Image (cartoon, rainbow, N blue to C red; front, top):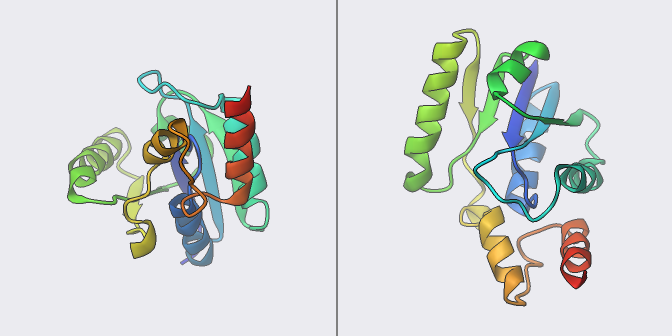
Length: 160
């Protein structure tokens, strides 16, 4: 495939599962834009600026990956960047209904924008940012779930 795709999320923090999807998408698309969003319904551990810096560090080795931040509707960001594909994923059937709802609403708001789903690699199918935050909050080891840059950021954040 060619063309651009946008991969949105809060990435609080970015996990090995996210990185796996970005790596795979970077082989399928000429450009992957990782869009770090604000979500007023979510209380994040890292600020938007911190998340952006961490994601830049983690994904810096990918030549065709761009990182940006946004607030508001994803469909507006896609329009602004002239992107017609959104990358999403679901780990379990519990995610499927929500992801289908998002894809449908986005398609209604802009019929030119399609949602492409990649399933996570099996070893990351149950890894989520919220699970990582929960493990870290009780002193657990998350080295199997996040890149080293995230481990350092978590350690620094929680020592403060």
